[in-house]
Length: 264
Image (cartoon, rainbow, N blue to C red; front, side, top):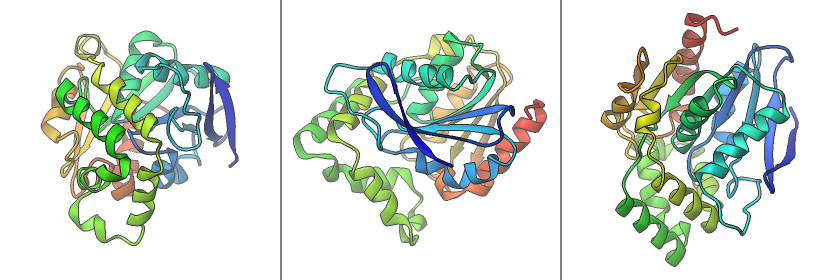
C-alpha cells in the first residue's frame, strides 16, 4: 500500500492503487473539500478481492493546485488519464458528491472504462448558480476556515460531531486550498448532467445519508430516477459522507451490488 504521484494533464496527482492485480477494478472519487482518506474504512475491506484506485482531485489533498484555469472537463480528464495510466477498464466507479458528477460524465463519454456506477450523495445537478457563487465569494474573501462549521454540519449527522476522530475530518477540510475549493465549486456550478445521465443504462447503485444537508435524499432520488433500473438506498444516521460515518453499511451495500451484477 504505497501512495504515488502520477502527472497527467499538467498536474501531479496523489493516488494509491492496491489490491490483487488482475481482479476487477474499483475507482473512488472524493467530494469537495476531502481527500482519498474518506474511503479508508471501505477500501480496507475491498482490497481483499478487488483492484482499487483512489486519488486526490487537483486542488485537494496532496495533489497539485495548478494556478491556471480549469473546470469540470479537467477533473473528468484527470480521472480518465489515471485510469488509462493504470490500465483500468470495465471498472466500478464510486463517486461521492462532485465525484459522482465525474462518474456520470465518464460513464457517458467512455463506456469502455465504466461497467457500473455507485453514486453516493450526489446528483446530476447539484445546487444552483446563486448558491455556488455565494460560496465562492466567501472562500475567496474570508477563507475556507470561515465556512468550516456550516460545511461540517452538512457533512455529518449531529452525534458524529462528538466522535473522537471528528477533528481529523475538520482539519482535512480546512487544509484544502481556498483556490482548489473555489475552482471545484465553480466546476460543480457549471455542470448539469440531467440530459446525458437520463440516457445511461449501466448498472447503478445510488446511496445517500438520511441526514445529508448538502445533497438531501429527495435530490439524490431524483437522479436515481433518471437512470433506468438503478437501485436507490438510504443510509440511516449518516450525513453527506456515509463512507466515513457508516462504512460497514456502505461496504455491505457495495458488496451486495457487486454480487448482484457478478462483479468479482
